[in-house]
Image (cartoon, rainbow, N blue to C red; front, top):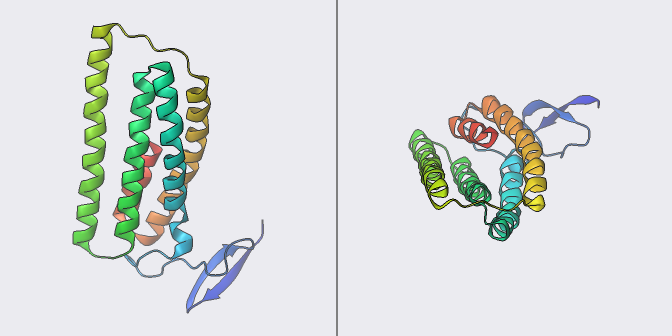
Length: 173
């Protein structure tokens, strides 16, 4: 793919020929993202909204604690993406701190749930059925989330945005 220089609104950057004409990296550290740059968050949000329904259905059908945890993780990702989109609509250290705290709380809650279920499942001797839908969705999600996490990391580094960088690391995990 060829690259070319683009001048948009006084900002110079490189873009792919297929990229949107309004693409321009934010030149000022902490400046809110432009619609093009928000794309990774919207893709994450959309993927996880669809995934929640698929995974919860598969978890109920297979009676799988692991799949229900994966579904809750998708809910956490929805929350984290929503928080990041909210934070990216404004600037300021207070807003960033609040966003980081909200993301941390949501993932601590998920860790507590997983710990509880990992202690509860052996106690009740529950054995889930195999879920091919869950397995296929897990592999697809892995591929999509790795790509999105890399995109978030690059955008977060370019903007010097700690919230986007943190959410990118969470997406990778």
